[in-house]
Length: 269
Image (cartoon, rainbow, N blue to C red; front, side, top):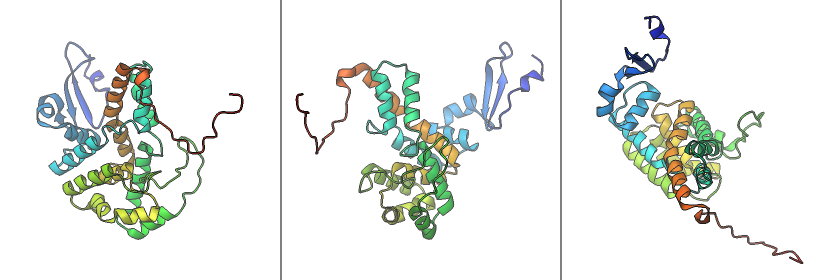
């Protein structure tokens, strides 16, 4: 292999040194200048490495801890979440692991509780920051109807729950943990003004809105925040898919519906 052919891989965040005997294998890998297997592997945590990959720099201890809190908070959204439920359906149906994860990504990608809602909410945080007037205008002005290309128009303000009357306990507990870890910023402001924003929007804060505020504080762009949301929610989907594959269809936890106005069977049935 010539010296010229060794330089065909171009990446600002990644550099490799090919093995002498095998040009298809790397002998050394560098992420933003750090030797991944000779340095990062034994000295960094997974959140620190994620931050290095996405941001191209080593995080502070506070930043790494905040990212670790976020990763734990959304690692398993639970069977009520569409992304996890989709993976469970794939698992119980005997689909391959890749199909279960793709189902989770598809169901958890949208504008209502999905990763795209985090993207839209991060745009709101970038625009409104800690300005109450800007938030009031953004949350009370109906979004202009757009031409649907990939995503339909949002039916509720991004970052707030589509259903429910009160902010859920997991969201409040995560906000408290992040506020104790981070100084000021969007999270600190949100911890103080959450109830005001909920009153303006008429909806409780959702995990998507909390994620958006925290990821904004950590310096991620909306596109990166969307990607991280998709990535960090997969462990729970995978675990539930494996569980359902073993349990079988007869033990699949279908949701029970209480129909209050059930007309009953038709005549003759």
